Image (cartoon, helix red, strand yellow):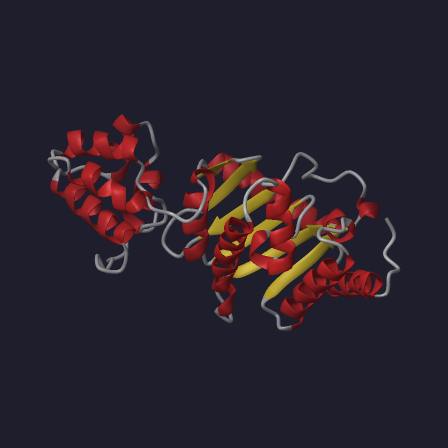
Length: 280
């Protein structure tokens, strides 16, 4: 496993906690695996806490203070780490996403959040939360658009997305919203900011029929996969699970259209929306 990097404790609460955790663990003469054992987590999980890839949860902070004799330091400082603009089930994944060097993502019904336009995201949020006021919808959209700013970097992360054809054909927000959303995807692909493939209906049965896939890679930590459902989600670092999800993604890549053919399809469907020719 790669060794931990030197962190700047002033850069973020997570960086500070990670640096202090590494310092306290080494002072106690424990390896990452040895600290992980009483926590019932892997050594790589501890390494992700130390590198800032994962956020320290309160349940672990309490135990770490007891194991390392740190007099409540990690318990007290968990409050700073708990602050997030994202739902609890997604907060840790969003933080990992922001420092990932590569992201591979497949969604069966939607355009991924990082690639959505404001109008597309707003229609989703209104559908998910039909009773909330417009001001809350606007805040949710603003948070999602802020998250998407990680694509402002011209090269990092590498984002490889496989779109299901259903995501192109389902008219979220109506024809104008869909045309804009698909043109946005096409623009990102033209600028070579993303690698985009479409898994068409003609592909038939495929390896990811069971749901979505999201895999993230990092400079100095093991890869993670994010498993999600309705209002729930979990980051997984188990090597066997990550390897299985990676194979599944490779299989749907092989079944999907090549990037250039995918781009042509996305642009064709956008044209149909623009001219009222999109089939139901």
